[in-house]
Amino acid sequence: MSAGDVLTIERLRVTILSAPITGPVDMSFGQLRDRRACLVEVDADGVTGVGESWINYPSWAQAERLATYCDGVAPLLLGTDGADPGAVLRRLADRLLPIGRQAGGAGPIWQAISGVDIALWDLAGKVAGLPVHRLLGGTTATGTAAGGAGVLAYASGIGPTDVEALCDVALADGYRAVKTKLGFGTERDERTLSVTRSRIGAGVELFADANQAWDVAAAVQIMPMLAAHGVRWIEEPLSGDRVEDLQKLAADSDVPLATGENVYGLDAFEACMDSAAVALVQPDLAKSGGFTVAREVTRYAAASGLRVAPHCYSSAVGVAASAHLAAAFDTVDWVEADVRPNALRTDLLTTPLGWEDGALCVPEAPGLGIELDPATVARFRIHEEERTIHDR
Image (cartoon, rainbow, N blue to C red; front, side, top):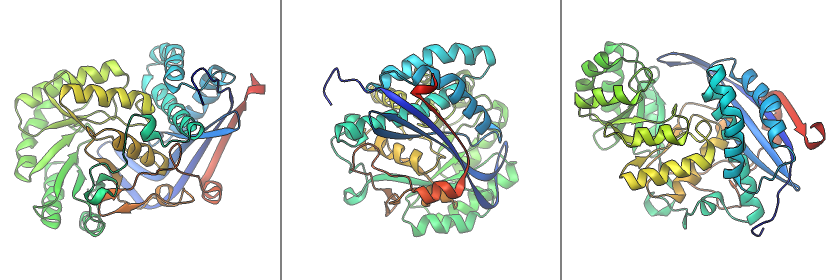
């Protein structure tokens, strides 16, 4: 495809998947009772791009996302040129974010836009015959893994239950870092950290995630416990995740602070990265604006001397997207790999994502380099909506 060519968007399909889990997964703010994914497919000139929009919380997020795509995104997308994903993102953001502000819901708007953006980058890569990480500017898929096998991943999803068993899974799979869930009271959090550190030993990095469980005073009190267990960074420690509050905490703690999964818009990311309180930035490609925003965040982080570790609690589509971002930029240190069982991660693709020695192999086929398995999609599909250029 040459400069000036047009890719007319002809179809938008949104599919909701739900896979059962053996028991609820506790978070500091609630429970996850099944695994859900919102797949976004965009057709243009006979080529289909696949993306994902995050719908884990709340339980009714799928209904909101379907309505946003069908009533908000589709009329603005169908029949337009999809050759430049960044231009499409800006057009959707310009039209939909004012509505989101009036409704007090900019986050869900960004999450919807994210799915389209990922799908358009996948589509662009297929048209160009290049993997997305090369379209982003990367020259190799070796990342930082030993032996050039892929990009380094850390094992997440550990705690507050099944700590020993999940640590053993992480160690058996060769992960060199794990992340625990905190925010369940000091006694339970201390046990999670103690058991995790004992199980993984001193040679494996330990991260933690509070999911915005604490106010500043509570966080200041708990930081020495994190430091005592050698926690390398704490993700989203504070309710509201406001930069001014992170600055107060950073002034009273030596534990590095990480944030980004609930930051929306490049201006908000830049405000975080301009603060000395933030040590690590974590855009989520299925939430924060897809590849287009994550690329700019990563470039800004590099200029600011910050490191990037994309947040990812998605299906195999979102995991693959994170891998491409990591392969394109050496500013990205880690990708996130939830080690709890998840059929939407392990069974969704015709060729599962490759993992070796704690690293994620980056697909080299055009686009995201993945193909949805129709049988798995049919097995877990609970709803699907489609809009075409003829519906306008």
